[in-house]
Image (tube, rainbow, N blue to C red; front, side):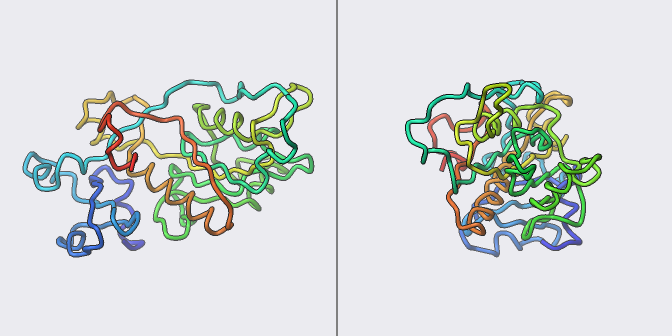
Length: 269
């Protein structure tokens, strides 16, 4: 894929398929109207004209290539992020120091003080917001916008933070998860996250395309996300962990009743 083709990732005129190409590029390059993004050396996302999602098309690519839809499992107001009551840790070393916690979900309200150190710098290394289109995509990705720690720090110390980093969490689930996992001490409210010295990398998923909702009979106004965007989010988190040379724990609150119930689907493997 190149910059001239990246509109296909977000366009409802193009369908997304998860293809097990296993290193055989001929599978991905068989049609000049198709574009693709590699996930790894085995899996890729193929973007094809949506009018090819017919009975014959599904038979050709297989039903399992259609991305599953994932929904949120809870609903929590962003301003009511839960945490753990301050408690005596069994060891002062078990604070998550040096560890990254990656969240793939609904985003984060990064301006909340619990995601800041006492010196007003952010615990967030970066945010990849798949919903905001710009020319500032993460390296190796072709959609969304990446905000680094310097931008986030500038935003939280600004009178108008969203003029600098316009990403937020309107649903609250991603923020709640980040708070439970990594919120810094809030002495006033007497709570903290479980790993207070860990740092965060956030992926805000873009909504599922209308054609896919229609294919699965999901209501137009339902909150749901595509499996392929989730997979690209995982790829991004692993890339950041590799860049930082730090271990990462990946968390998500989204789920689905679609697909395998035996742990044999692509995400499980």
